[in-house]
Image 1: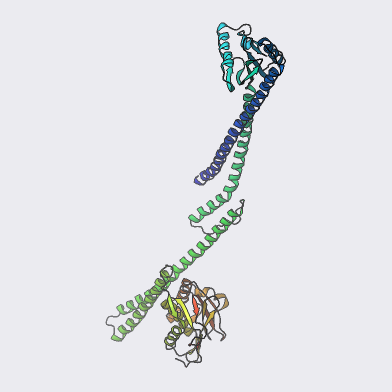
Image 2: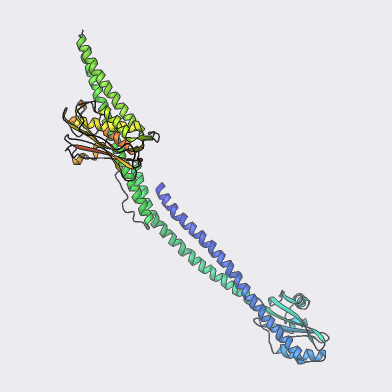
Length: 501
């Protein structure tokens, strides 16, 4: 129900936004066109009135009449030749001493059409008188039976007299034109709005379809099913496809993380259960004896202490892996690489009898956490020692400077090596590839996982491969290496063919 409401809400909101934008744009355009049409038509009317008044004035002046009667006759002849209708121009000339000459005499004579009441006639006379009392220039006046008139009055000299010349035109065509524009806009706006709403609803449906698929997948994931994927969203645009791919990639990572977490919990539980079972069994054996001997007690004590130590190492390793995900896991500082590696090597070569070889330690400075890096390298050396034969087994460390301020540490041996299919999984937690790393040997299966966590925390990478000697080769590559300047006093140090420790 909630998903359906969300889908409908998206479509309706999109349609509402489109409708709102359409209404605003249409309204602004309507106001501009409506007012522009009125302004243009009124300007045309003013130009027509100016031309009509100028023609009447020119006719009066050109007639050269000397008396008011002559001026009046000239005006009468001209205006009578320009009949007035609702769409034509009203002309009049007010001649002092000779009255008013116009192409609509009833408007100024005080006589209206038959059938008008005295009250109607009186109102018409009052409005018509406004034509004579209006100031010179342009003005707009309401006139009975004609509506609003646009009036232009001018003063002209003819026959020694000051004649008032007037031209007026009804503004009804302007109103009709604006009404036509309004009707056209209303019709076009309704059609455009309907089309926009339909288009917005269709587009909203298409856009919401991949979102609905994502919502359905998210609901299944929320219910605990990590297997569904979106795949091709089927929606328009690359953005939706990129979002779907990112969502699927996130689900892949979550699936891997949850699977790894479950496996990690299961392995950790098993690793902890084994020593606890041994301890409980030994204590039960000891408790079953009525009077155990001192030797038996010491034997149980040794076994219990060994298992407790194993649990302690496992807990320490788990805590280290947990801390490796924190930002303050490392405390980096500049390390003088050659003395650092030689000191580490001197300590590691004393823990077992092997053929230890240290090759090519470049001079320079490496920015890293010395304690964590030493822990990673010791884990690799311990791992190599565990895979080689006592006495004559080969354990070798090579250090190589790489372009781009990087350095590689390669630890290899002549042991059985790591199968190609296991080289990616060998760094997983609790992973064991052979019997040499079983629980009886004391290993927790976390050594190489700790190595990877330390290296990745430094921004480096770790990989497993095959050694030139036929065994395994673990390679660490770290950034932050600054080679020593050319011509430095201390050359690259090498220790090859060292005596077994």
